[in-house]
Image 1 (cartoon, rainbow, N blue to C red):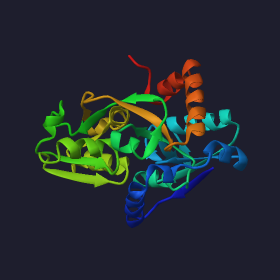
Image 2: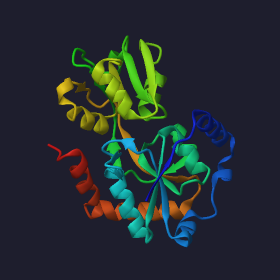
Image 3: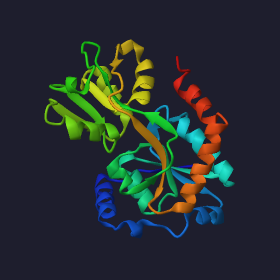
Image 4: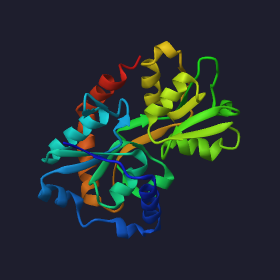
Length: 262
């Protein structure tokens, strides 16, 4: 089951401000795992526009994270309900209790970890750039003087803002990744910075545009998210992730959605 939730920009900003102002304990539910079992469903927040982790195809939400979340709910013993939320609204949706957990390719950052909990990593990733065929962007410093596109609230945006905002020609922001990539195709931006597996996947499906991508610029962990202090649901998530890793389920998902590693 999929429900679409698109907060207004004002609502997102208000939610972010409110969440940041609240003390950590104010965000702790009594016991999300007990709530999930009593309600008979696991409500998962997901961005819905980050292929191949998650995207809508023929009206249906699909991708790596969707298969993982469906299997996770199955092992918890309840059906899953997906809420597709614009990326900038995901953390407020979790901290406010609108969703039970987030499973949406969220990379660990210190700032995020101060607001939400991260499971053990289920995917290893990195920051990288896709760029126009007439350019050579091998290292982050090569972004200097370029028009760069980033997704609002993403690790890619934070990477550029923290280290290179003063040297890029222009930083253009997008609520979701696909519009940034479309602008890269037609030359409105010269580079798009995001996570390497997603950049590689999307560039490989745009061969006619001759786009290129850089090597990894760092290393990042991707985890499932719960509210701070919500120990029962996080213990349950980590237990099942360990089993899925041991059984080879995560490796099979990786090969299915990203291709065999050469």
